[in-house]
Image (cartoon, rainbow, N blue to C red):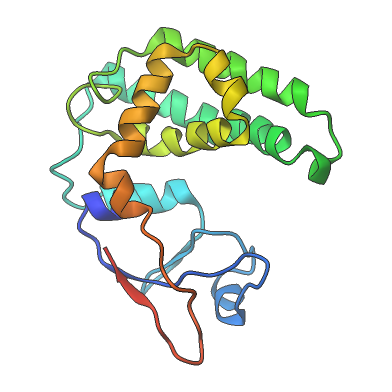
Length: 193
């Protein structure tokens, strides 16, 4: 979404994580996605890619006040670390060999606190999408997908309204477009966006 907002074009190579191409592992041995290969460096963390894209001219994004920037930084850090940690163990409890209920409870606590902090209109800070929106809403969406009945039973009214707006927004729909798998032999990458 940050690449779309920044009008930064790239070659998109859709892969399966269970069948990582050698070409990907050569530039990022970590083997996680997303990976953005630039002429002078490789970015293999989502937040690094978002930050890189947002440093270009992004006129369609909300400009933070100082208070909003501090809140945004704090929430992005919380979701990228603690929330993601618990979300992974909630969604993939058998992979981690843990009980999912405790991690689900931790996700709920973070979402309850977010519910109190925000008043979306329609985005967290108003009429324009912000770095905060595109950084944390994908995590919240994954939490919803893990168990929709549980998620909606929590009655996070503002969080659910924000998530619904996010999932129906053209920006999200464009970012979630499906692409054919990349074949290194055919070099069939797609230009995105």
